[in-house]
Image (tube, rainbow, N blue to C red):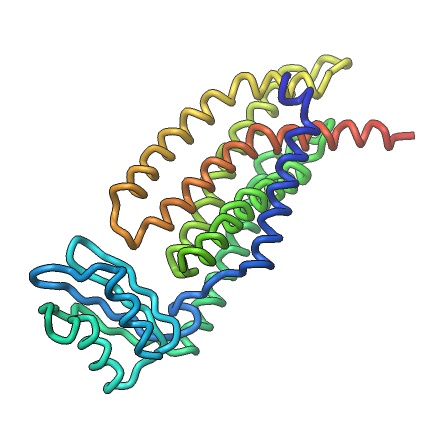
Length: 302
């Protein structure tokens, strides 16, 4: 009942975090990767030793190819993301990566992505996120179709979407800082992270909502039903399970962040933030909003 008693505090914390995330998005923005805006992707592997990132990045910047992102991959390779390159520019890039022939390298891949493909990928990413969100609303509305008192089933779905927006907005706000200060780019892994957060975070919310539904059924014969007490009891029965489940996933993601390949670090960090705030919203936001709506309905009745 502690959470329900202090629901205004937890709801206010979430509102502040979301507003800060939206503000950072407008101030810093997001760097869009070549998958969405078009460009060239080059992967090279060094035979003997890989040059230091700090030595190589200034040389690439001096080529005047525009913004060039250099990412380590494995123990001996680099991935280079740049604008679309001509054959001459491509050859110059490889010479620069080899430090003018001082380091022997092998070009593993060179891919050019046109703007039309980037626009198509952007469209598909947006459509995927919208369809997943609609699917979640319809599923919750159907699953809770027999729950009509004291809060109707569609409001459970509405609250789930509010918490999903919260769970995605805050990691995206964190990503804006990574994008601005460390050059992190929005790529296909970013979209995968957002879709994964949507799926993982809503599962905890549904578990707690389902516990509320079961407790409401068991108290259906009680005419003096106290909705806030039932929600508080349901939270007491569920929150340890939610925290333990999320903690196991977060530990795996942290291991991926610290020990995994460079290319998946931002992906792991996004998912870690999504899991943390998804668990927070399931416990400290979704259920308090449910009680808040029920109390507001009571006050609005004549």
